[in-house]
Image (cartoon, rainbow, N blue to C red; front, side):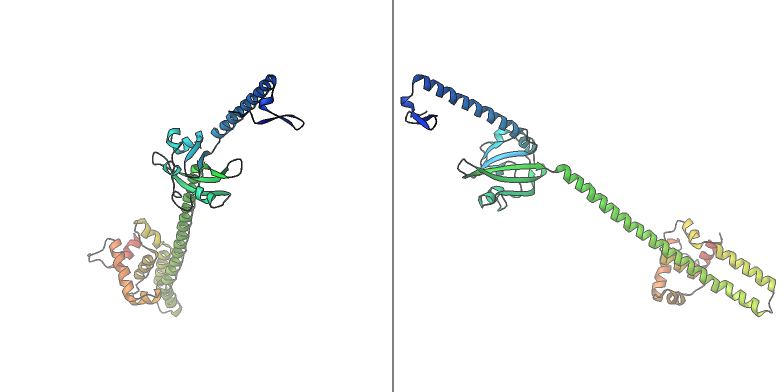
Length: 310
């Protein structure tokens, strides 16, 4: 109720107490006050419309953690109702990891910060989790006294999904690169193995024949025929023969196969491959198992030679 002792300005710095106003002046004063109230109501309605249609979820909390106001976006984001929020503690609705800790936005603002912003996961009323960026700013009265905090929640679910997709693609890309490097390394090892096999066969089967031809005193026609046979064998791709039988031999095992087929003994293979003789025997056992020769009275060298000639 207005006090009659209050002074009312009449213009040009002149004021008069309500008790000395005329009836007409009081009527005009009431009309002015009514107009101001109407304008204020319109302004409040506009502000509430802006508040409720904001893209981010927003709520106003006092310094005692009581929720004073929430907008429509917040209700949808938190999957809550107006009655579940107004007058309730903020940490009872849409709680998160910062609640009851020194990272609480309200405590941060009360400690003197003008603004607090962080990424946090919040829990909806149905128990589901939504990632948000929460921003908190000071809420003061007309004198500047802190009376609460305005919290703003930006839903970043879509951004998180995109980040996970990018992360997954990067992982797959790295795996593909590793696979590609392994394949290239395997191909290079196969090339080296084939080259070594050719060299070994030349040393084993071609050079001795050429030496006999140089020396003379032998049946030249037979030596040339033998040389041709050996050269034909060299043109055969031993690796592909092995692969045609769908054998899962490692590059090292293939190399051992080539040396065994060429007639080298375990000690010789160990020396050529710079490994222990016992390791050669282990490789040979693995090869026999993969070839299905385990516990069978079949000579590995004979088997590999026949495999090549098929």
